[in-house]
Image (tube, helix red, strand yellow):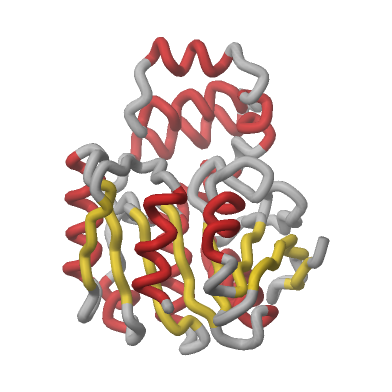
Length: 253
């Protein structure tokens, strides 16, 4: 397992596969290499790109230097871009979009951006406060359930998932929900970040996703200079890699 050292000394674990121009994939909340959508997507992209997947800090095999600061996640992504040869396109999923945008605004090493449904839907101070309270009390499972409820999962589905063996995987990284809340900030693209984006950018939405996520994706595209908005028919916030990969090849090749 290779690692790259971020600016603050934190080791960031990653995988590399394929051949071609470098492409770094950035996960959203509750995901990392061993439990998330990026490995199967990488498998479908590696004929066209050298694909890098990594564990965001605090997840999987990466380190977690405290105190947390969203700026460190920008540095983590740029360290991966450095390991990829000094420049790379970036694809982000959900809250990972905030990290991709910050990295592209900070450095010309990011050569293109594709963001899938960045959830810039406004902030929710009550959610943030309750999440912090649950995590401080060590109630990791309740923190995960709180997040699931916020993103629209029905209560009965949450209860069923909590009884499944896979729930322990999410409990192990529950603390990173606070990290995702922090990277999304006020719940919109910061104007100074948008103004600094100078690379080709596309915001992607799933045609079968909830309206609030599609609206957020459209608003994000409108906020970025020259960005495109594209819809992948029939897809939700958990897109099928077989449907998404050809879109990314078209956009980023």
